[in-house]
Image (cartoon, rainbow, N blue to C red; front, side, top):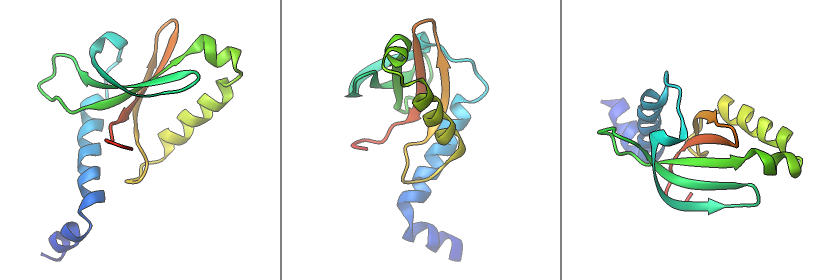
Length: 122
């Protein structure tokens, strides 16, 4: 009873944690590739990365996720390799309700991918 009341009082972090647990279960234990996702809108873009909202292709679970797509060529040219490695390491170590959490990473010949939870407006 007391735990349920605490959960209601702090609903935002608790709800996000449940969704994060669900997303991690959905994405763990599989080797992902770019064609595994249905691409949706671009939600952000920068000098060497673009973030697209995606859903897992063929999955009954249609929860949106964010896919950060980084071009290897641009990372090398702009000397951002170490920064991206550090970003990945930090995001893999933390899990917090106020941070967009990293679910998994993968790559192909030309690009690096970071699959993140999707937070609308965030």
